[in-house]
Length: 419
Image (cartoon, rainbow, N blue to C red; front, side, top):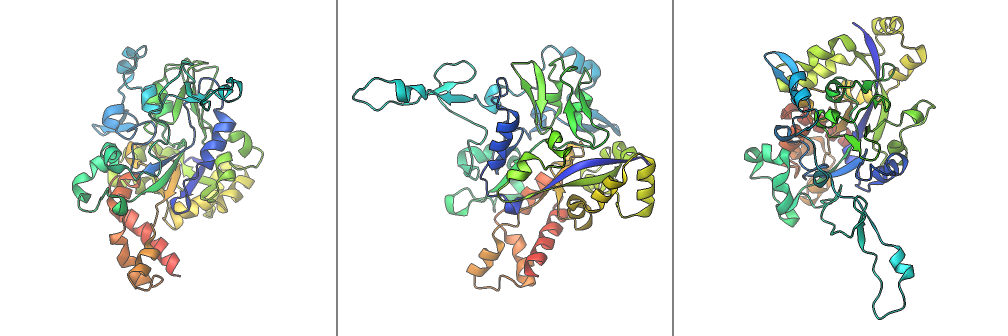
């Protein structure tokens, strides 16, 4: 057993109000530059919806993450020979249309237009071509639309479970459901982007597990973009280098939280330290049954209060103050102790380390409107099966389709509300 430390994050989706403050502040801090105008290291999606880039969760199309073949892990994008043959023409890259064409406005027209009969207009202008354009899509174009009858059929998650929840997924205005899903890089324990990089520019920091790009080593092959199933690696068209979320490591190193965490209006982000068994990652990722991947990842997370773990961690070079931080870590308790937090798409086998507490939905208000005691535990538990957000949808996002862990998490949250 080799114990390593991993910075992780848990997001409580019940607290997200969809204000996009995290996205804007992250954008201003990290990607407010030429070449990455289209890139959002942090974005907030409305689910159901296509996501950003569009349909990124459809791995039959994009071939991101890992797959189990004859009992062994291999990249969905193919082995080394296949990727070498495609290195100059990668066929599995999202296009600008899958993201969106960034734009600005001709603000100068508002003050420089001569006096005339008509009010001057600041027309949209492409940041890529510099020419006037028609705005047709953006990173959160379908924000607050709950999918809608036009967009929801393109949601890969909804398509996958359509037969199971047809009678409960309603797209009419008064019957629709929606929730917000903030996304950053998952800083995985088994990152596919690192494995896919031909030049070795992608790496995972040994001290805290943050996945970064060596800008000097990057040659712009973009295999990392296609390898990442969450599509959280971006290509800077100006520098010819890959860029991604850094978990704001310059801030973490001086004791400050990430920008998205500090500016979050709903205070939904929990930052903390995990201790995990690095020797067991490959075996856990190669778990045969996708429904067992969550438990396999939980088994990797070690109890920082265990004396045996503490002794081994010190022998493996983890400082004492990091051990104290791990003991006080909120993310460990939410994920391993209380089991209310769940990883995003564990079936990708990357072992993501940004976890989510699923939304309980307005269950209390729904019960109160029916005349029931909204604070009584039995009523709350019984209402979980009638939530507008189908448990099957949440399970397809967080537990590879297994509804039991999602139901357990929601029941724990309901019990806490009742208490």
